[in-house]
Length: 321
Image 1: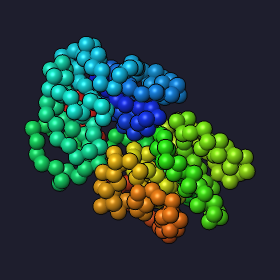
Image 2: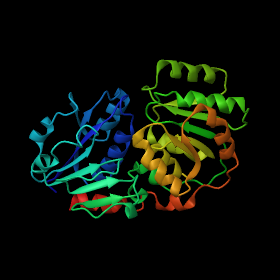
Image 3: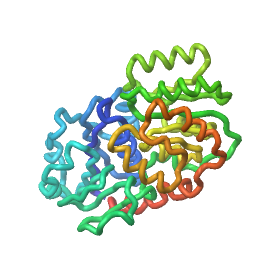
């Protein structure tokens, strides 16, 4: 098939890794179909992720300005362009559409668009949205999870608490969660997922606690290693982003909250599904009571486990048409 799928996405310390994670997940599906994939990335992508992309045969091109459209010069009429960028959603998308076969937007907000072919928004329920002039892939059934997380979850005996507040943690929530867990003298091992986009103060604190054998920090883990870690843990505390959906797909009992506007829609949707313990807006004075509520839960949400990403093939097929 003479077609290329081009992604324009934001990633790095200013944006976190949510855009990267879901674009990479969709790219995995396309590469398995022998489709060429190009990533145009704005942001300071760290070398670990850069190497991951090249290893997976993705052509990477850096964007030096958030509103730059230079990638349009490389598009061919048969190509599909997928935009996952807050910087490009307010420009004239009809002009971009004229350069490619299909234009698809991945979004977190309840917005309508002109000049696009499809919208992907896992944070909004399909019953909430009007019927516009473009195709819609809405709700958790279209969650863009990396293929490693879609494999059957192991049902072995679980023990442990996994903390992941995303690709960056500018409000230092991870440290506050750890401090509460340590004050409670929990017997479960505490695992912390973080990246080098966290502050040096945070990273040094994690290593300090690790030397005292109080926590197990894990930095920049490969997806298969995260899956192994999730499958051994019973509980998890997450921000409302792709990592939370991945954890729910691994059958973890989750506590979750938000600290940015783009996380709030997914948070609100998952509250309706009773996805886990509601931490609300992450605040230090509410953490202890919410963590205690989490430990009173014994059963994960099997409805979500069965429905997350259950219709992902529909989106892939639409791209390939």
